[in-house]
Length: 331
Image 1: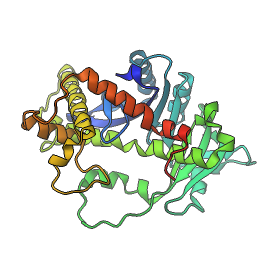
Image 2 (image 1 turned 45 degrees about the horizontal axis):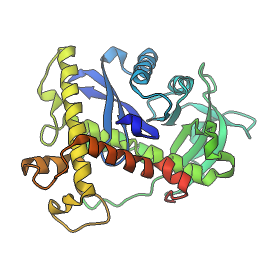
Image 3 (image 1 turned 180 degrees about the vertical axis):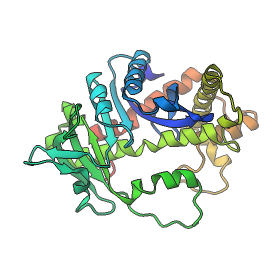
């Protein structure tokens, strides 16, 4: 499936797995809706976010990815300059959000400054290009990066009770300040960063906005009512955890592809409780479950190779990088 894609946009993140003292590090392909898990590792609490674990993970990920592809690894603020350095050494591109006490210096600056300084002057809904510079004044893995920022517009909540309180609590601070985004995409000469600064900043914003898809993956895995209910197993055995994750990963891929094909054939309208046509109402996974409960009577495409070919065409035509090349990125 991955070999037919022009580039691979991959989100990486940690999450709890089965037990409170066990964690999973996952890489997922992002596109539309839910991301597609492609590699997982189980680790104990003491190994959470360790540099050597991250390095080992990237080595293993490289072994399963097709060669000769443009790869962009997207992460949140939990991944620091050692991660960026290792991704760059592999010949890949990284894109991450930075916050906290780390310092930066643009090439046009004479001195280092705290990263919070970049927050000033950014309005809600604004995407900003700062330029190229260095990140990590005191870091052994100081990174040469492109700095951009985006502050999402506030959205009024009709329902004061959040749908996912745990996730919203975790991200409340994230959305109370601008995203300060760093990447090494300036190394990609095809982007012509110096002459397309505003458009490149929009591209970075669009790429990073897809990172939330991996969080939706985690909810699907953990939800006892609508997902796979990992923690119901309560297993302590690492091998059983790996088997459980393998099963859910395969199930997610199958459901995603069924839902994707159903939407492209406009079957999803039969399952909507409304007439909305402007945006997706039903996730691919939920739509697939409804089709399966209905005996897959509406979906005549039964060969997965045809669905995968359809997906590859859609991915290559509508990825943010493809839209950037065609000048069709939304402002």
